[in-house]
Length: 481
Image 1: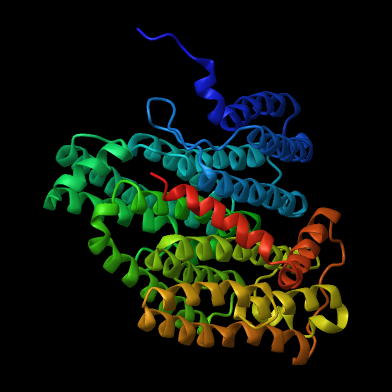
Image 2: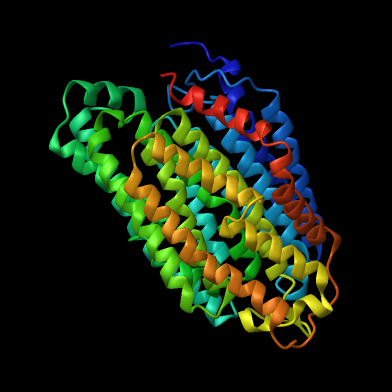
């Protein structure tokens, strides 16, 4: 029996730290009760920030640990910092909302924390079993968050829909994993890649299709998007913000690793599937949002469309395609955080409102919110010199370099259609007859998120090389296998 080596646990220390801290905070929450929710939330933010420092102390060696189930390379490093940033933003946005909606529960920030642990495990998964365990830890936490407002019919409905459809997708994923194990003899990514390099069986291809279908559900790619509009609308707005900002990062990281490590030999097969997922997501995201009056449902379809753009980078492949995907995903997270920060400010006499018409005349009585939303909407539309323009430009450039002219043209056309509903929000805020004034009480943490989002969206053009070079380094490790 080999001697236990504690050094082998070093790459997983951030997750271990978050798990132990989460259990300690859970005990503290039990003693303090729901009155201590604000304290637990700030403590959870502190834990996540400290986990970032712990992660900074670990070198991304790229060597698998825990019997080959876990890997920490530069790609995982980059994506984990994105998840950590998203967790901090989501928790900061939730603080005031939980008090305003009288749904302060000390479990809320801890469930977000445990979902974050699952996401970080997903990002570093190097085996089908660790992939599934991380995915389920995230999914179970998200099911609870969607239905956490138990006395609210829409929240309960959103939680039930998400749970039922999520359970089906998990079953599909698990069935695919069993097929892959049966036809390759392993669940380890490297061993699966070696097996498929020698012989590609129809059973392994079928198993891969099921795995890709299960993962596509997590990023709400068409045709696995049906849960997204209803869950976004029905869940509490702070939960919707969390769903929009963070989980898709981990799921996309997992999809990239699965495609380019164990199933790289199936490139001809998955190329066609990802091409279709990208095309369908862009089209549905662009056209289905045109008739939406609820801003949360509109953002749901916007997220579906944006996942289509991200998938273009995966279809393009190579260093250019994946690095452009990382850049776009980072910019999208920043923009979405600011938009949901403003949506959380949509309150009339203490009641949350979500209709686009409620934004009428916002520029006259809340100019900070109106101009911030306008900047973010211009950016999401892809109008220069906002960050969103450069994100789309790099994605389409990678597609052109890879010869994906049709997909690039379709992407540009869908972006033009989507610009209509983004610009419609700006028109409502600046040119429609003013509606009732929103409540003026906005907590500092929410103002900070909105302000930083706007500044980063505007400032990207001044120093884009930092993000571009970091993304290129991250992608370089992914293809060194």
